[in-house]
Image 1: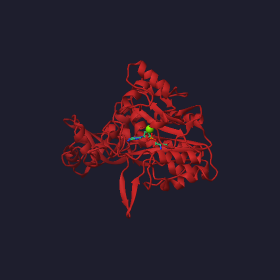
Image 2: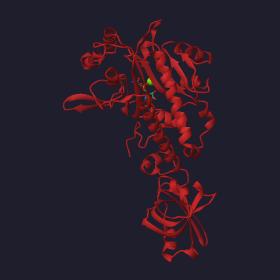
Image 3: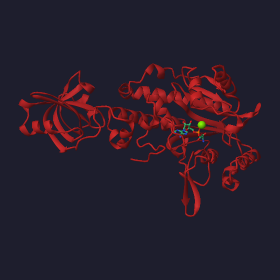
Image 4: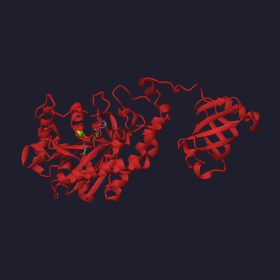
Length: 427
Ligand code: 4AD
Ligand code: MG
């Protein structure tokens, strides 16, 4: 029996296997709180009603010892989950050594060194359950809309998002890189299936030590044949509205544990505000920031823009020079591309980056050369433009940024089970 199922079994005798989370004692009574991954259960050991062995086990069990508890489920309004178990037998399966993570405050470095244990703590547990729900929601969203899942490779021969953040490895004497994005592999698949997506780990050797960057993160990327820039923005809006709604619907307990301000999430309704890069620069300059056309919009600037709105905002049409080689130029304004970023509210930064893709073979070839990319490694990618080219668009969303925003945790390191950061690959 799992703890979360107990409310439907009031009056029945059950056995729960789990770990001792916490314990209160008052003379002849002990209240061990047991967790099993599905929930927390208050158990009640009454000295008069149990064997000496059970009393002793409950008394001696240390924090995080694995235990087996048998007893009758009773309704108890004040207990977590609304039920408790009146203990008949309490058994220690394995006595835990002195547990390093106690209810007192610990420093971040200490907690990160103990990430494998920190996962058991209630907030970390809640964040990763939100992640679990959002990942399933991503898959449901695209599956329900008839997208085909295309698993893109992790080992690649070419860069996708600039050459400065590549993790290089040896592939039997040839240079290979860990994938920065599945996008390039999705584009040919879009010609095969029309609507496709991938969802896998991606890697960026970003020398940046910010709360928004990981070296390894999971990205969900749709790619759609014959979809143009306007439709792309609508797809991104619909997707993000769906994800937030799904978390509010199915992660109520977790969001409560995380003390998330739900009023902020309730605002996430379409349509989202949109602002062009040119207008964004004006907005920032108007707020006294030192930015001009051609500058990158960094984290601080994103936050200023996001704070001007009460829901995610889409920034469109960035300068060609600061965006990836594959983005389609704006036919009405050749200095900018049909690229978009979606910025989350509350300072969580860019959650989505996407664009319409160049579908003209010769223009794409020219861009590959301009970016000093090795043309011979991109022949297969150029083929998409050679054999029945078609306008198409797609985006990528880093799941960790969305989990952080929805959960209200400031740093990405808590949104992935084992974060890979600058200076950290342990545990
Ligand atoms: O904007 P990016 O670099 O876009 C691409 O990779 C495109 N090829 C996607 C596409 O069009 N199919 O990354 C997309 C998203 C960002 O908006 C952000 O959410 C996340 O990936 N991201 C990161 N998340 C965590 N740590 C990092 N270092 C990240 N870099 C990007
Ligand atoms: Mg981006």
